[in-house]
Image (cartoon, rainbow, N blue to C red; front, side, top):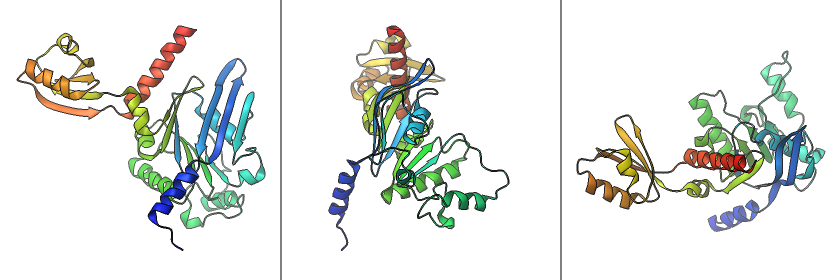
Length: 289
């Protein structure tokens, strides 16, 4: 029987509530360095979850814990409801990590055949793209570093096809456009703690606001006096204004400078939200120390 669109959507919503991987109050130390601090983090079925953070924030440590490559100092790590090192769970898990070394004497096909042999139902060779085991849960740690634009977009399409087939992907990346394009949910980690979590739209809404770009004769000091303006800076011949709401600020701009031109209004992007979240978190941490 072919499911209706509504039934398919209901099934997807139900499956998305199922946790396939989680960190439960997990802390991990490297000597005196605390890489993760009491982290609670869940990856749910049928989603792409992007884990974002600056270098050294704890992203790779979280991935290695979920892969069972290391153990936490405290808390629990679960994959498919059990231990990540369980052989049955490992056969349902795939990973593309930043650091790795393959036997230098193997040809590409031999290398793929070797890794395919670790899984009970590997993908056919002609469909393989770093997912030869056809895993239910795939960890991608900075997968597009060094790829050109065409190759990066091709990998994005492959990830989308995987999710359409019911697979789950945990993605770490420094390309915020990539996270915005692919992720159903985003978690931002900084200094070993999850500081924000939600859909891309929800993350962007946490900093909110609009970006207004225009050419105006008004000085920065005059712009900052307009109600609702939170920041203003010159960018070549134009000025870039940050505001909570665009419409009243634009009306004030036109009233004060009839010669205003080159007006552009855009919403705050993921990059702005990420920078605001991580910078605020760092400043707060510094004040506490």
